[in-house]
Image (cartoon, rainbow, N blue to C red; front, side, top):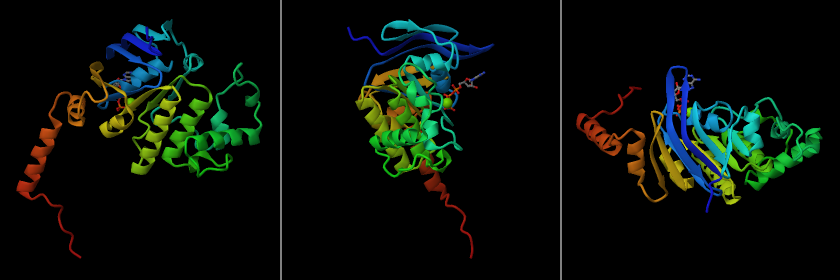
Length: 272
Ligand SMILES: Nc1ncnc2c1ncn2[C@@H]1O[C@H](COP(=O)(O)OP(=O)(O)OP(=O)(O)O)[C@@H](O)[C@H]1O
Ligand SMILES: [Mg+2]
C-alpha cells in the first residue's frame, strides 16, 4: 500500500470562540507538490502553522509515514523533517548569507560539527547549495541577506531546507511579492525540490503559479476544504471560480469589461 508521507485527518482549529479550520483532511506523497489555494483569511497559514508546530490543532490527527505525530514546538516539526518558509519572513536581513543558512541549526546528530561555525565553510556551503538550485549570481556568502532580491531570499530558504534533509517543504506564498522573472525562478526551484523526492506544500493565491508546479490542489474556503483534485482535472477558470467561493469570476470579468467599454472609462487625460 502506498502510505502518504504526510496525512492530515479531520483537523479542526479554534482560537477561543473563533473557529478557523473545519475538518480538514489532506494527503501529500513524496515528489508531489500540493498547492493550497484559497482567498485571504481562508485558513491556509493557520493550517501550515499547525503542520509546522506553531499551533496545536483543536482536534484531528497528523501522520508522517503512517505514524501519528504531535508537535509541541516548531523544533519538533523540523525534527520530523518538516521545513517551513513562513509568509512574510524566514530570513534575517542583517545576517550574512552563510550565517543565516546555518542559524537555528543547533547541534544534533545529523549536522553537529558544522554548527560550531567555521565562517568560511558555512559561506561555501550556502553559496554551493544556492548554486545547485540555479542561483549562480551569488558567490560571496558574507553578503547580507538584506541585499538579496526577494526570489534569492526564497531560494536561500529553500536551499537551506533541502540541505538539512527536509522531507516536507512548506512554502507560504513564496511568489506573492515577486516580479515575473523572480517568481519563475522560485517556481523552477520548487520543481527541483520535487524532483529530489521532497513533498512540497505550496500556498498561493496565484492560479497560474499553482498550475505551473502543482500535482495536486486543495482549495480552502472559510476554513473548510471546498475541493481537492489532481492536475488536469479542472481548468484555470474553474479553479478561479472555486477560490472566489463559487462566484463566476470569468463572467464577472467579462461583464466588467463590457461595462467599461460601454461607458468609455478611460483614465482622465492630463493636460500638459
Ligand atoms: N491567533 C489567532 N487568533 C484568532 N484568529 C486568528 C488567529 N490566527 C488566524 N486567525 C483567523 O483565522 C482566519 C484564517 O487566517 P489565515 O492567516 O490562516 O488565513 P490565510 O488563508 O493564510 O490568509 P492570507 O491569504 O491572507 O494569508 C482569519 O480570519 C484570521 O483572522
Ligand atoms: Mg496566509
